[in-house]
Image 1 (cartoon, rainbow, N blue to C red):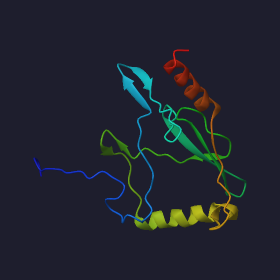
Image 2 (cartoon, rainbow, N blue to C red):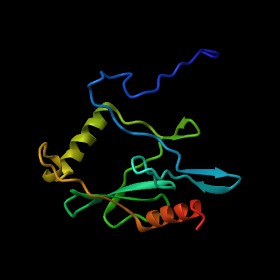
Image 3 (spheres, rainbow, N blue to C red):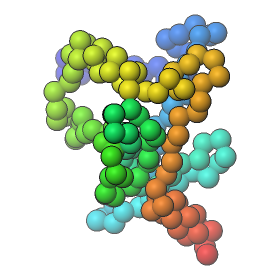
Image 4 (cartoon, rainbow, N blue to C red):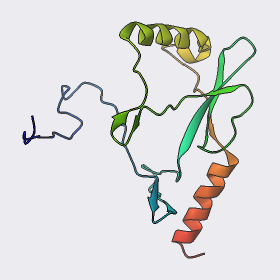
Length: 152
């Protein structure tokens, strides 16, 4: 199919009806390698603030394996105690670097994850807010980049 034309439709209401919920997710560049130097990117707007640097999200568990909280760290930080990583490399250089799970494996993992989520977070009404925190190093990097942007 070399030379085939490709058209993109980008927007939040292209594949769902107007009144259907949409995912408010956005991809943003947070780090760039230029001539061997790391350049951190940051957005400071209150509605769309970002944290610079490559990250990992760790899920902390209790002794029974129930989910306690998530911690966002820089990718090279050591894991918090009793935590496992949530982000995995799937693509590199435009190529798949791992096998993808089957639909059955996805279903099984989803059922298991819901089972491990404490009831307080599973309720449809008055659910507790699941705790998510950021590491001290990530917060420090953000403040450092802000200071550099402000010429401090």
